[in-house]
Amino acid sequence: MATGIEHPRDLPTPDRSEEPHPALEAAIESRVPRERGVDKLVFGVTALVSLAFLTWGFVSTGSLADASAGGLAWTMENTGWLFVLTSSAFVVFVIWLALGKFGNIPLGRDDEDPEFGTISWVAMMFSAGMGIGLMFYGVSEPISHFVTPPPGTGEAGNPEAAQNAMATTLFHWTLHPWAIYAVVGLAVAYGVYRKGRLQLISSAFEPILGRHARGAGGKAIDMFAIFATLFGSATSLGLGALQIQSGLQIVAGLGDTGNAVLVGIIAVLTAAFVLSAVSGVAKGIQWLSNVNMVLAIALALFLFVVGPTVFILNLLPTSIGSYVGDLPMMAARTAAEGPETSDWLSTWTVFYWAWWLSWTPFVGMFIARISRGRTIRQFVTGVLLVPSLVSVVWFCIFGGTAIDLQMDGTDIAGAGGLEAQLFSTLEAYPLATVSSIAVMVLVGIFFVSGADAASIVMGSLSERGTIHPSRPTVVFWGVATGAVAAVMLLVGGQDALSGLQTITVIAALPFVLIMVGLAVALVKDLAQDPMVVRRRYAIEAVEAAVITGVTEHGDDFVLSVEKGQSDTGEAGEAGEDRAGHPHA
Image 1 (cartoon, rainbow, N blue to C red):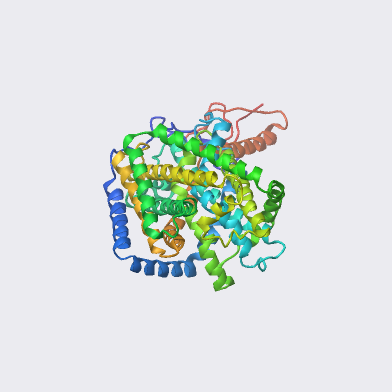
Image 2 (spheres, rainbow, N blue to C red; image 1 turned 90 degrees about the vertical axis):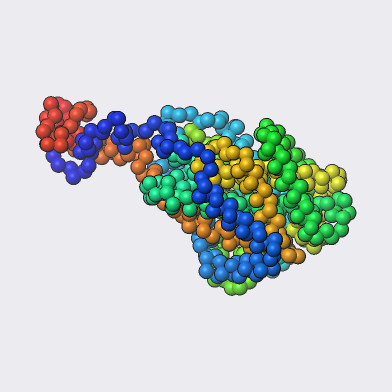
């Protein structure tokens, strides 16, 4: 009986000395010859371009500021829609992967257990969700949206201002950023732990680029990944410097300090990072990171207890409900709604999407590293839900406290720039000086540990995917990150934050297209996964065999597996049909 369906018997017997049959998993080991040392092309080009940017910024800050403003205007006018569309598409994409036929594919061998237990994995995911951004925007974003509602959400002071402010904040900090990270994390983890590829962004493009992924095209992808990480990390460090400066002004009474102090703060913290890098105190950095996590949790609990506890508890379900209800409207907001909306998007939504895209090589590779042995469904569930829940609780505590103070007559929004609003909130409660110092310590450690982690990623990309890049390369990228942060702040002039936002959006634009290609390559990879191939063969073969068995023997037949026809068409020993091997 001819079924017209390709079955395993139609394929030549695979040569076991070469690649295994596509229905069988391969040995998970690098099948790409690993070259040692620095990739001179990748590191050379990225280092030269970075140094040229720094020279331009320090020598002619004004012209760089003008060029950045023009670049931002062009980017928003012509490609703002691309940031908005792709970011929401990535959310749909990773949920589709988790819920569909690829969900059970493991990031490792078929029988491999997760490398880390669930509790440890969740704890590390929690740690990845914390950073300078949550410290900087924990108060400032909710209170900004509360006093100046986003486009289309009513006038200031309207009854729904608080819930709209929280919904907008959660839109920027929950599913969307972590879906973006999940795309890179899945592509890297699948390639490294399932396919034995090198730990490079370019290696994930092998399904569509083939050997060119290890050639000039792949090197260009890794260069863009380095640039994205450099500017994304510099943005975070710049935010941290702004917040430490504000804290010093309030706690130490320094008054208006200007950009010179900002550059000095970055220099001191960068020196601290270099010292930690050259001394090799990896355990010390890990210890500091753990201390930072405890401090962050303690600060949140403190504010929850001494602040408006009942208001915060009420805000939690309200914020989640408003976020879910307003999600379609927020995801569809583009510059087509007018110049006011376009300006708002460049300051908030598009800036965030660009910032998250810039962070994908770093965070994506981190979550890939800790997720070996997890299935795609487990990975997506953990990556989307755990950090998102952390963000919900964090913003409800800090943002809710600030909104409550604002409604009671304390002008948090008018207390200074965004970087000062957290300190103004803490001043309304006991132990303000202690909690403010804790904030500066938190931000300082986040700065050092963040520069350390981002520099290792850039070093890895510069040295052909090694997980232990050389110390000089790591130090170079750490110092470059601090210097780029200083230039980005100087470009903003009096409004240093605008410099960070402007350059981040421009720098992230090329990586949007890389992310789209990464998603396509991942699907092509997964479609040929041994588990998917086996399932397809099983369904087709069993279906055809049942038809043959029922046709020839009625209900009285069984299925067996025997060698099928050869390429010359000769039948097997028992003379069974190609489709299903029935026996009487």
